[in-house]
Length: 183
Ligand SMILES: [Zn+2]
Ligand SMILES: [Zn+2]
Image (cartoon, rainbow, N blue to C red; front, side, top):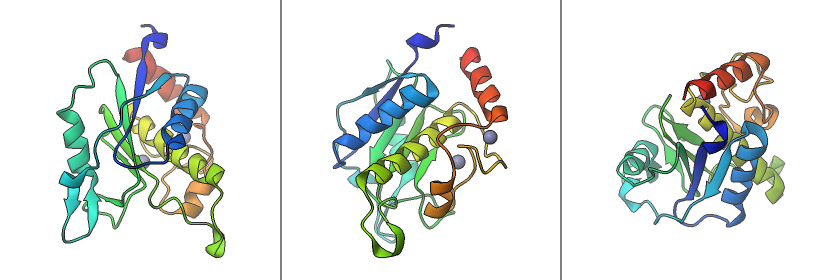
C-alpha cells in the first residue's frame, strides 16, 4: 500500500468555469490527502440528454466514463455545468456508484444565492468541492451518515449542503482510512 501513488482524476465535461476543476482538485488533496490531477476536458455530454425531462442522465455519463480510458487513475470525478438527474430524483448535485470508480458533480444547481442575491464564486466552488468530496466518499464505499456535522450527511437541498462541513466525522474518517488501506 502506498497512498502517495493514488491519483484522483478530475475531468471537466463540457463547458465549466476553468477554476472549478482546479479548486475541486485542491480540496481533494487538502481534505482527502490524495493526489489529484485535472484532466483534458471531455465533450459536452449530448448523449445523456433526456428529451422528456430536458435534463442530463447521470447514469449515462457514468456509463460513458466506464468505456473511457482512465487507466492511470484510481478514481475519476467529472465536473459539469448541466442539470443532472437520476430516475428517482428530480435533480441531483452529484452522483457516484457506491464503491465504484466514477463520480460526477454539477455546478448547475449550486449557483442559487440567498433571496435572489448573486452567489459569490467562492461559495459556489466550496459547494462544488463539498459535493465532489461527498461523492468521492461513496467511491471509497462510505455510506450516508446520520451526523449532520459530517461530509457524508445527505444533502437534499442547498441549505443542507451549506450546513455540512468539508470533513468526515470521526466514524466516517476511520472508515475512510480503512478503505484507503485496503485498496
Ligand atoms: Zn450521497
Ligand atoms: Zn460521518
